[in-house]
Image (cartoon, rainbow, N blue to C red; front, top):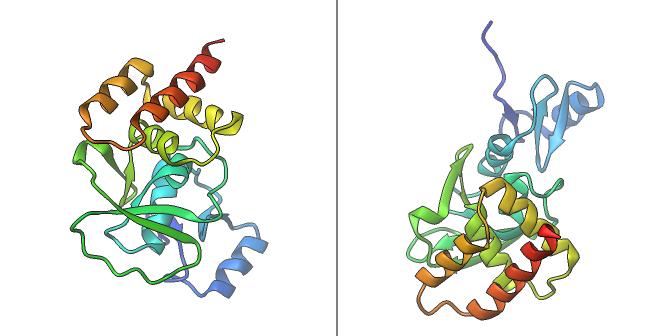
Length: 186
């Protein structure tokens, strides 16, 4: 039997009131700003589809948003952390739930999940270690979960960071990631 509804429902497909009524009736459940039919499961492809349905196409999910898409966080962040490749033209609409920055990104640092470009787990942990103001036990656990999802260890992190010339925060990121993964081994 063919499915009549898409796997992810957004306000572009049905009015918000109907989606909420379907949620109250137990037919769909919320995934970030979208909804999903109850006879399907939530995975990284679904979370990518939800972002792709609500964000401009040239944006890339990074840091905590990427961690959520990869399944390392249970809930989406309050403010989605997004980036755009330098030179990519996009129109920032000023949504309060988005933080957008312009970055240099290689194709090898990206995965396409559900129509949304997302930084790989390896790139995500490097960015988290470089840009997180605080790096406490919650971030360490997040790094460990992303390393499990991505199937990499500290040696691969060192290699990836070493390939990037002129990377600000490189030394601090390596120290943080070494400590985070050492905690996971103990």
